[in-house]
Structure formats: structure tokens, C-alpha cells
Amino acid sequence: MRELGTSTHIGENGQGLLLKLAINISLAVQMLAFAEGLLLAECGGIDPSTAADVMAASPIGSPMLKARLPLILELPDAAWFDIGLMQKDIVLALEAARASRVPLPSAAAADEVLTLARAYGHEHHDLAALFQTLRQLVGEPLRAAT
Image 1 (spheres, one colour):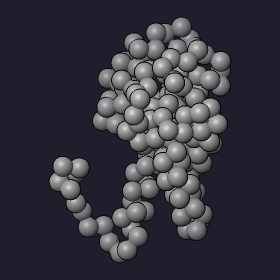
Image 2 (cartoon, one colour; image 1 turned 90 degrees about the vertical axis):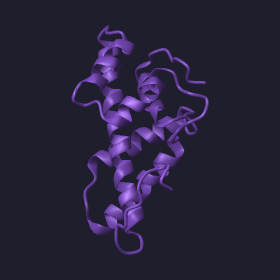
Image 3 (spheres, helix red, strand yellow; image 1 turned 120 degrees about the horizontal axis):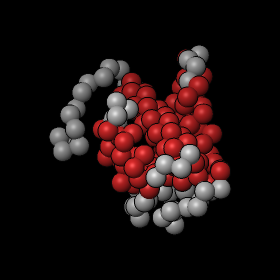
Image 4 (tube, one colour; image 1 turned 30 degrees about the vertical axis):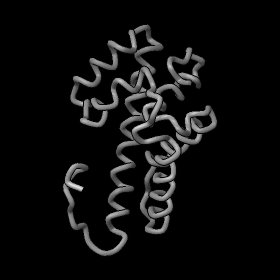
């Protein structure tokens, strides 16, 4: 377990799962926001590799984004965390939020794009495939999205 991170007691039964879902909301939303910004830059004529490097070096460059940067423009054969599993967690988070009457508008938006990603055949691709999904929406050529 220590190789994966530290173990922290969260609280009552089920609260650890809820916190995992909360973390995964942030992962999905961060990746989606980064993909949107990168697509805007690319469609504006900026080299996507240059834009991705500059964006990751800016204040928005979280450890997750920096780690996934190589995956965004060239999807790996094996996903670190695939679209299908992420959407499962986002759906669980949205269900928990509805039960608690907690609004999660950015998670709901991420869920919509995850649904599109699956429709475009990215279910088993890494979460970084959100960029490829958005490119497909505007008709940009796919790079390494097989």
C-alpha cells in the first residue's frame, strides 16, 4: 500500500469511497478544462505541443496534468485510468450528490463529455483522450487515437 501512497483513515464506512469520488471529479474536470484550453489554442493556430508545454508550466500545471502531458497528444496503448472507469466514478458521484442535494455542475458537464468520448470509441483509452474527443467535435484530425 505504501508504494501507492499513504493510508489515511477518513471516517465512517463509505466515506473513503466518497472522498475517492470527490478526487476523481477534480481529475476529470481538470483534464477537461486543460483539453478545452489546448483545443482553443490549437484551433487558433498555436502548435498543440508548444501550447501544452506552456500551459503545463503555468499555474494551472497540476501534478496530474504534468504527468499526463505526454499522453494528451499521443494516447498510449494502455490507459492509466480509462474513460469508462472515470465515467463510472463520475456517475456515482452525481448520484451521491443528488441524494445529498449537492450541486455538481462541472461534474455533470464532464459526464456529458465522457459520454461523447465513449461514443467516439475512447472508452478504454486514458482520460487524456478527452482532448481527442473535443478535436473530433470540431473535426480536427486525430493523432494516435487508435
